[in-house]
Length: 121
Image (tube, rainbow, N blue to C red; front, side, top):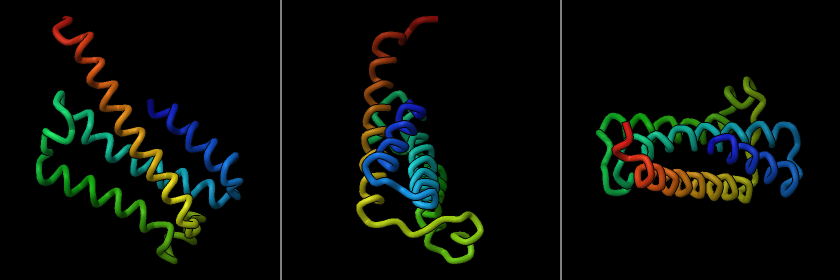
């Protein structure tokens, strides 16, 4: 599923927003790091990620990494070092939408998997 959402992100950035190289790199960095970090909360449990609460340290680490990924492009030193730029709000909102759809899709896929393959050895 990760690759599918990478391609969706590429398409949105390139064909919808006509992103420059720096916009593309920044947008893809944000979407890929935030989604990979948050998806841990979905796949860590057989239950719904909303019902099953993660441990305090896992939740803190996950939120720290996601927030860090959002701030790296706007901090002058790291933006220059990595070639990031501040994106327009509409791009951030699109990346947020992709991440939300990815998380919901992963939750649905997890439910399907356990329904069809639970108990198989």
